[in-house]
Length: 107
Image 1 (cartoon, rainbow, N blue to C red):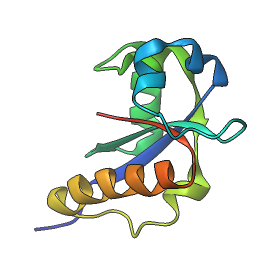
Image 2 (image 1 turned 135 degrees about the vertical axis):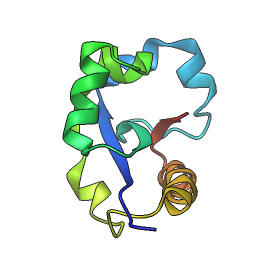
Image 3 (image 1 turned 90 degrees about the vertical axis):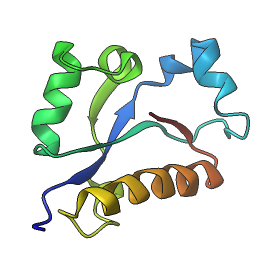
């Protein structure tokens, strides 16, 4: 199977921290660290970001607070990848970022 999936990271504006559900999902958040959304897609990550902002199959935090793709964070992964690898890496990356004190939403 040809690898065609990506794990992408969207930087979120810190205003997302006013959202109670987002805060509850990030009890270990360290003040001043980044807030991000982590997802996976079979599309180009730039296109998927644009879809979030346009409200197309959008996550509400990515749509309302998304600022740009975090390309440096995405560069940690070999991309594209298979769908099963993307599912694993999406969760794994979210866990690793939370361990760094980041606020992460991963659906």
